[in-house]
Image 1 (cartoon, rainbow, N blue to C red):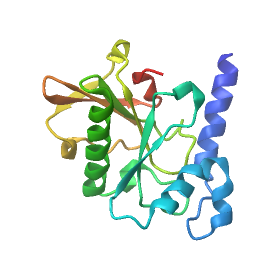
Image 2: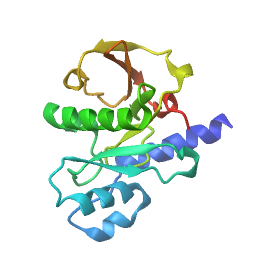
Image 3: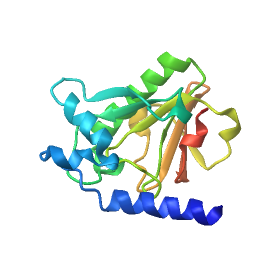
Length: 177
């Protein structure tokens, strides 16, 4: 079983590393790894920098995704975005999470080694209260959330502050399925 999981993680990492998404060539967006880039291209004409999609994975029925409208050729990671762009994305994702889940929200960004989509996206869901056991820091606002540098990151609110967990690859387990 662990060999199968390892193989799947290796294949996912290889798919992102060799990402062929090119927003200027629509045929490249037909690959499964480019489906979110394709959605971002469709949204490009609107003014808001972030848009939301319902997660289509049936095992994640209660999840929403926050995506930047900005696209790029190949795999693009959160640390490629400017501090202002990351702040806009985190701010929008957290606001959406609060509107959906009240005080029980969490947002998560999976690390580069386990991502299965080339387009940057934040998972939004209800906080899995059993998931609070990793390295974390506390910040006051989204602009203070660090760039993940290849790792995953997940965030939730506690005591009016944001608890930011870093150093993991698979972070969406912090959200209830």
